[in-house]
Image 1 (cartoon, rainbow, N blue to C red):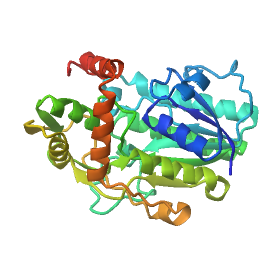
Image 2 (cartoon, rainbow, N blue to C red):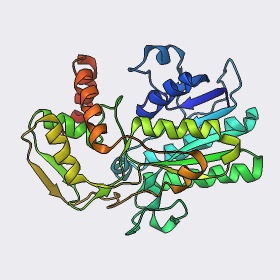
Image 3 (tube, one colour):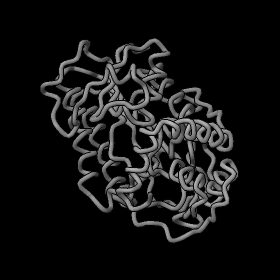
Length: 324
């Protein structure tokens, strides 16, 4: 198994849980992020603070990594519609990671892409990894992920870098007090505020954080055997957002009214991933149902909210959007 790993975006939701999981698996992990970790003091002490929009020329690591796991991104789809520069930054960050790998002779890169790259497919069945096309890109964020995938494949052909690409789908769970739909609805439901769903028929595939990191660790353990492949890491099950809102209200014991409006520009209406390739090649089996995952997330979330600094973080995030 690969032992020395550099993880970008290590202070985020997936990054925090993955650094912990890789450490438990016996890996030596170097966390890298533009901001400090607020969730794990051990990770924070080791975190290299670096803006990935800038080259790595002055970055000095204690050990040359055997693998770079590139998670860092501006991850909000609608934000990229309002500020397209955020999408360009995503592409630039991927370029800088690849250039660092090329110049330092690092052969392996695991890239976190998104189910957004499938675009609006209107598919009646689960979506396989080969079901995407450039004309279906719905938002600048989507295009930034698709373009990053293309750049990674070009670095394989030109410079011998071995890639694995994972397309994640609506990862949720602990370490998230953002304005993503689940922590946002938890915040509102606790206050009995209206839960507004953008797109009354919108249906998505939600992945609990432990299932996500399990899939990523399985790739690390088998990297050279699966190099060159792209995997959906999701549950293979879809849930309508209006039903998700009801489930959250029930978990919280909320009297929130649930309303719907039109989906926002750049967002897709439906995605359920085909995870058969991950099952076959990785032995990946998502274990946490949405009901159980929401219960665990709510318990963690309200315990975290008792820490006033974390509460203030989410409130500031929402206030910037006028949602607090």
